[in-house]
Length: 246
Image (cartoon, rainbow, N blue to C red):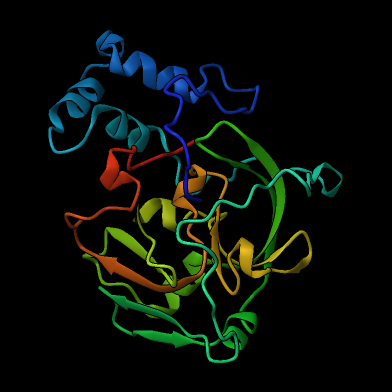
């Protein structure tokens, strides 16, 4: 989750080889201004969004919120490749006393225990976790869809962003469409077993659509907001990309 080294700007994670134009190459072209040829109003809307970096605008435009990312078979799991990155070490959390708070721009704030989470519909998926440091691992995650939790909290029409706060002080923010993607999970299992503390127990983010530093561990609070604050994420506030889609 927490990069230890400066990211390689040329990093090109493994992508579905059915893509005609890999996402990172697409963004490179966008940054060079080559996408303005033949895109008409699309290019105009991208270049006109001065409040966001160009690559963030492009990523948002090509993202398909309801389209699942191809998953892997169980046999593809790479149990030894998921590296434990820590921000301030592994926090001590009393799992019996643990509560997940969901608040902000919602009509029904929630406070959920681990058992409350496990009583909700269970989903598992085998996906690739991609770290900005240059490594990747295929992992099976299990838990509850974030979109199901948000639905229970009844978000207001103003909600456009989702903030995640962790027990170790880490913080992150996502766009609402990415948060509601069907493969964005709040996970409490890894590779068919209960999540262990070093990997984010009792609850962590898991998704195939974001780089690893967006996938917060030890999540204790989820806040829906109408706008981004000055703080957008621990690493983003140190100049890492905010959208960080793959």
